[in-house]
Image (cartoon, rainbow, N blue to C red; front, side, top):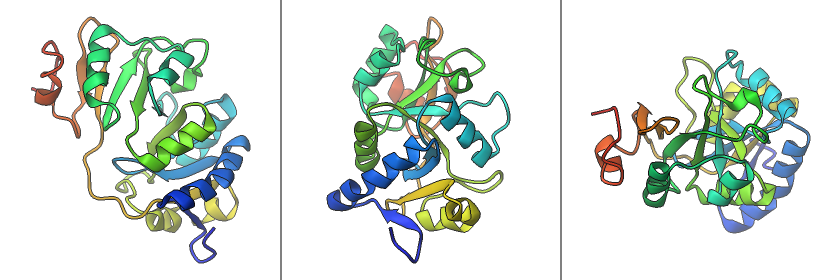
Length: 223
């Protein structure tokens, strides 16, 4: 840990490997991590009920608003019992890993209800950030993810912004920060609902709908 910043360097391969132990310990304690992604910094942790509850408390998340899951490959979808419709598989083949979030059916036995959206699906993204993919691989399961910011404040693009906003939580050990450097400005991930007969854009983002339609012409929304 950097004593001056209370964060763990998470950039070079040696730094990433050194940070895995404290990061995994934080998740084992059912507490929250801050980590870089391909878009902005995220908050998250393990997907069990206690870990999700800790994330809700830290983020002060309104009831009924779910978190998405980050994975390191489609094998994790099978372990979570999540279903991948044919058109979703086409989107995955073209755009994963990357800034595309898919809302998928299934997972009733593996995914806590708090992670399920109002339409009944589970939002999932295969992150393309190499350090966070290594963290997920070491953890051996998906991790939760939500933007690292307070209400009304833009999502953090550096560890310093998180430390400035969440000083007390870091000091108390409720939050542990993995410093992957300053991230370049980026749109959020595109979110596509894959619960119906046809995919539907429910949040425009980094991957334009016109590009998604090259793989799935029946895509609805964000014309």
